[in-house]
Amino acid sequence: MRATVMYGAGDVRVENVPDPKIQNSTDAVVRVVRSCVCGSDLWPYGSMPASEEGRRMGHEFLGVVEDVGSDVHGLTSGDLVVAPFVWADNTCDFCREGLQTSCRHGGQWGPNGVDGGQGEAVRVPQAQGTLVKLPVAEDSALLPSLLTLSDVYCTGHHGVVTSRVAPGKSVTVIGDGAVGLCAVLAAKRLGAERIILMGRHTDRTDLGRDFGATDIVPERGEEGVERVRELTGGDGTHAVIEAVGATEAMDTALSIVRHGGVISRLGVAQYTEIPLGFESMMGNITVTGGAAPARAYIEELLPDILDGTVDPGRVFDHTVGFDGVPDGYRAMADRTALKVLIQP
Image (cartoon, rainbow, N blue to C red; front, top):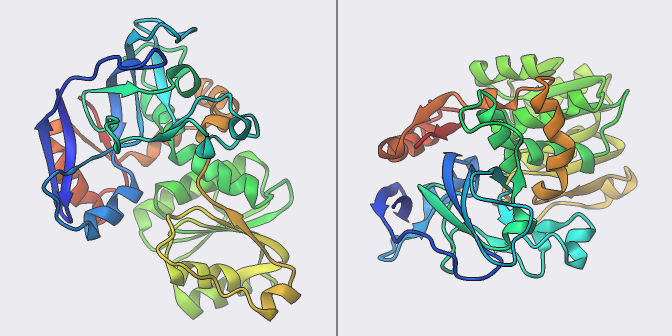
């Protein structure tokens, strides 16, 4: 089969790799119907050291079950399923606490002989706990939105939940990438009264308004802080969702959160320290967030997609086949695409 392999910064190839097969009784083999490129894939795309072995890519996919191991129950050949961005047994103590990202028997797509999601098929470890069956056909128009349950919509929702967004609250989302836009959508769904989106790409912030943003702040740094303060009477917002992962974004978050407020970290952190000094202590600021346990949220978020209440699949603005995957990476790195859908 064909699959995406990254060999270093800017070096993405689509190559022939061995077809996946059942290796353990808890495995399934899934034929990929839709996959995508994630904003987090751009970090290694910009900085990965050259490698002769390469790295299998992709952690967001949905597809059709082709085979299951003897210990997999509730899934059969022909089922359409979505996979969260980590695999997990969904039964260990961490999973039962809703923290499947810390599953004692789980792992990530790509390393240690596990297939990546940007391929024609995937061997899914811990299939019964990982995969969620979808009640639609594989040609459904809902597939792009259902694919966001792998990562970006659940991740945006995680930021909203961990920052304690609720009816009547105000929230600032820093970053107009797919995760930030999904956080706007999730904040609207949970009743936020004011949603400020900090971003400067008009096509993206226009979608943010459609998703529920009440205010757009294109300024960055001190100018951006001043603008958010101005919009909130000097107080800042109850919640801040940092969906970039850069030091400047975290500095902004600390400068615009209201006293007693919460900052949720969603962007893949490219920093190792947060300046939580006396001022943030006196303001009773909480910093939380982290990798979203997408598997914990899928059943909650699925019905609104099925009935058309929300359409997070609108974050996909560019579609490629496997031959176009390297171009898809370039488009996202050049900011000419928001999020690239891969349709085999």
